[in-house]
Image (cartoon, rainbow, N blue to C red; front, side, top):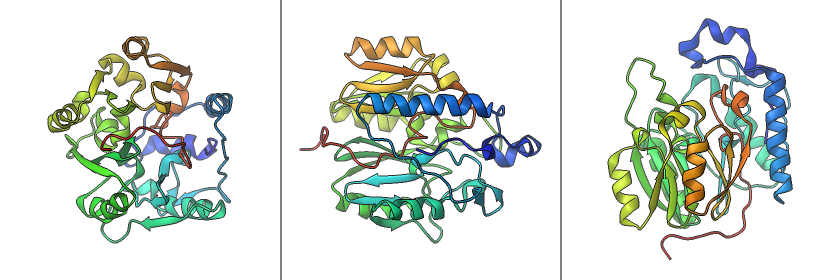
Length: 291
């Protein structure tokens, strides 16, 4: 995990909100407190937490590296890591820092997206040890996905390709879910998932049902406000989720899911939540969907 830095709160972001996709600037102190409490929650659950610190003030190809706190930029699968090629210009250059860190702790790099491929880690949601949902969107084009697909398949994953509803030219509040699959779907068990249907295509819902998934729908008001789908699954039917979504939590608990809440609303202002700020390095074997 990468503790929040001052690059998340630079006043210049408000001067060009179209470029930086800027919402309200978070309070850095509160952001750091919430991030630290999430790390402590993980430790209390028996999860080893490593700290990724940038060797310098992080910079993109065009200036400051906004959203440097998004540790999930490194997508670690069975056997090693896939290094993304970012779509957002203020993220370009982050892959260098991620690659250097992964190599420093002995994580093999299986592939780096390159050329005209665009493929960010958030485009994928690992649903099980053998199943990944990938989404084509502004942040993952066909070239990028096809570069990564054979690596995922050799690692033992079945891949379902979802399709983003938009956007085109204008900014929409829903864009946070249109760019990354990890904002609208979350695994809860081998056959259970939390989903927010307005941010995905219906064919994905149809497919998940065809492989025997039960789908729990996130409450609309809560999803738009605090994005509970961006939770972290600790084990089958046990999750760490942002506080402030009581209706969604009740729906999960009805299906036997234990929900551990963490205050994370200030961190969320930067553009991501619990899952986005956590890079998974190693997990115990979990459920499989296909065998």
